[in-house]
Image (cartoon, rainbow, N blue to C red; front, side, top):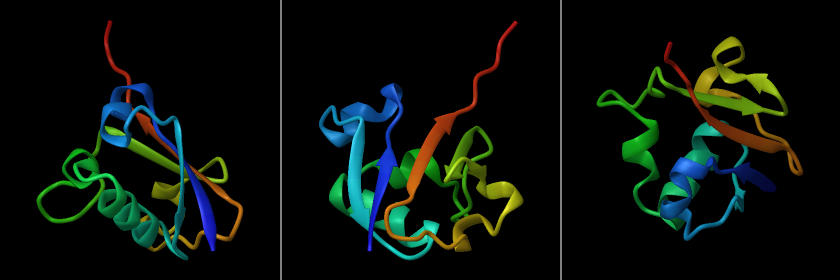
Amino acid sequence: MSVTVRIPTQLRPLSGGAGEVVLEGSTLGEVLGALDRAHPGFAGRLFDDDGSLRRFVNVFVADEDVRFLQGLDTPVAAGQTVSIVPAVAGG
């Protein structure tokens, strides 16, 4: 099943400049794994040493924050959009 992943500007060098990438997967973890296989380097930017999403990276499936769903086990249906949104901080 095809899923669209929206890539933030800061990570677009890893995707060859693409703002969106279409990948296959039925869970968020599968989709993000496919993203790293297609465009190596994403895993290092998205996951910490224990394989969890980094605290400063927000991921949404169909506009729902995966931290309030099932995390990497969140189901992703065909045609849905996954958005990667880096946290913004400052004063």
